[in-house]
Image (tube, rainbow, N blue to C red; front, side, top):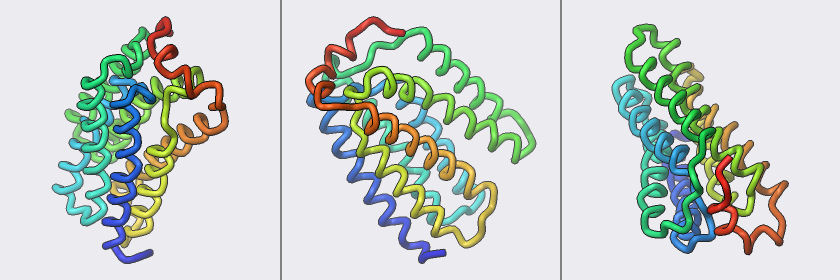
Length: 205
């Protein structure tokens, strides 16, 4: 375990990663999937509220960042409509399943089951962006996801005890961000970089 105050460093890492993604979105270099990012924002804010109630401690700052950063990405995506990925049936399906998981989380009375439902909803929300990263890696910026891995990794190291409530959400986000980062960096090539906008306006899958 490391000093819990390292969570502030984790937050700065998140901001650094997000700044590049937001900049690229405003320039039209990156085309975020609004379904994924909107749900990530909602889930991060809800998760932060729950962690405050459960007295998770400084580690809850990471969850707050996992909510605020996606909200900022969605906000700036409206500044450049050409940078937004076209929403298709698969995106809507995943978004609906994720919202259903959040609804179940809100009503179930068993804490562990509720937490699993919440994390599952978050992972389903990531599927549209994972699919987009496979099909059109040039429309994504990998740095934000790599910084997400570092953020969650540092946060997990600051936990005084490895409780399910403290570990499950940031742990799953770490794995999800790692998968996204690997998808993008292993599939993207120089030829993709000039095609970001064309891919974002292509026929939705």
